[in-house]
Amino acid sequence: MASLTVRKLDEALKASLRLRAAKAGRSVEDEVRMILREAAEAPAKTQSSPARSTPAQPHRPRTPSATDLPRVTLIIGGGIAAYKALDLIRRLKERGIHVRSVMTRAAQQFVTPLTAGALADERCYTDLFDAQSEFDAGHIRLARDTDLIIVAPATADLMAKMAQGHADDLATAILLATNRPVLVAPAMNPLMWANAATKRNVAQLARDGVSFIGPNSGEMAEANEAGVGRMSEPTEIAIAAEAMLRPLHTGPLAGKKILITAGPTHEPIDPVRYIANRSSGKQGYAIAASAADAGADVTLISGPVDLDDPAGVRVIRVESARDMLAQVEAALPVDIAIFAAAVADWRVASAGEQKIKKTASGMPPLQLVENPDILATVSKRQQNRPQLVIGFAAETQNLIDNATSKLKRKGCDWIVANDVSPASGVMGGDRNTVHILTRDKADIAVDSWPVMTKEEVAGALVAKIAETMEE
Ligand code: CTP
View 1: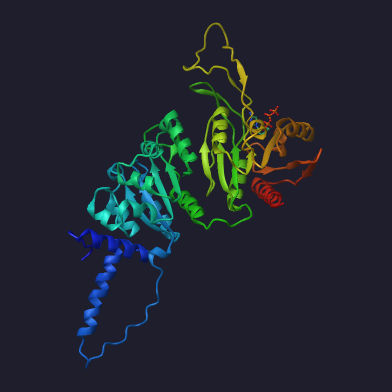
View 2: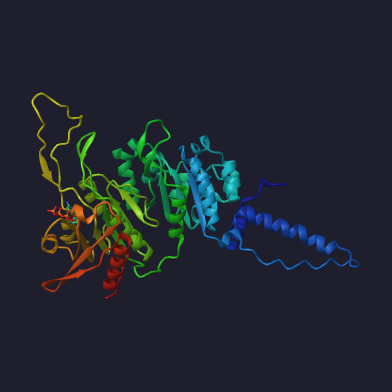
């Protein structure tokens, strides 16, 4: 008998079963199995003939029960990337994580609950009003009887419902009823991801404390479509989940909230053209990874880059300087802010709604206006100014002089100055030579570090920050 359905239980008995199961940390279904097993074994013992003693049962060492493992509730949304969610179940399980799966109705058009259930070793939950799943676990228990909820793939529609607090199916009811961390792996067409409504929903969810991984850029399932919108790979999601499940409050930056900007910004000229720069985002991403490793709660606000999300970091992707400023302000308050982004200084005054065409009258004039200075805006805030504000100074000449005047002009506490002249190979490269300028009363102290990889620079910078915060 593979499964058992018990009907017509009275409410009092259901309540006492739920209570008993909750106390034992089991699902109601497991608890009923346990009761039946005990009941089936008990008469066998009492009925056995006294003349024939039953051989002693070999001692069976207690194997860790599913409930000893970190637990994830995986909500599978309805997109083509749902097939990757099946692999994600395996990647989580191989990391010793217990997985319970939930599917939306749309997800079942792509993959079956049977497959997810078989991979997870526990039935996949699908219906809010299904008596059996309510009896089994109930949406409240599915929402709480877990250490982390992962939504993968998270479609634009599912994220819109989450942002609005809808609860009209099992997946959204769980997401509304939970008090556990939520990790969202979006997957959709690049135009849907770039749509203003999706951007608003992502920003709202980030403000609500939801963590994001991806989407990555690459080819779409639709022919000839590519861009940002691919769901992160199952291994990346599993690593991020593992980092979120890691006990908090370890590492020198435990309990600190850090905001980091990274990458270039893209300033539209018209729907197909933009102003950009050569920043790869590598240094900012390495700092985010290093700060997360040091136990900090990290939000990375990234311009368009070709890099994967660092594990355990909340990543918010933006395009323009003005988008970046809006997301930075929404992420405040934080303890530490690091502005590693190469923000475009100017944008086109009125970006064309249509593609600018060549005309006989010659080149179209592009009128530029200055972008907001994000670093200066945050440094000069009266309210919610982070305790430590760090800027970067990317210079091609007079490095220390230019960096010193930037530190004074922008009002930050430290400047990480680096030579980005083409000969240095820093832009897009893997190495960096930096000088740390700090305010030392009225003076400015300069600490010059040797050439290092960008990861090493990140590690050293995070160690210096931890030391300063301790003081
Ligand atoms: N920065 C910012 N917002 C801007 C411009 C720069 O937050 N609109 C930040 C960068 O993230 C960096 C620092 O300011 O931390 C210095 O950036 P940089 O490009 O070196 O300096 P600019 O202010 O742009 O000055 P210039 O281009 O004249 O060197």
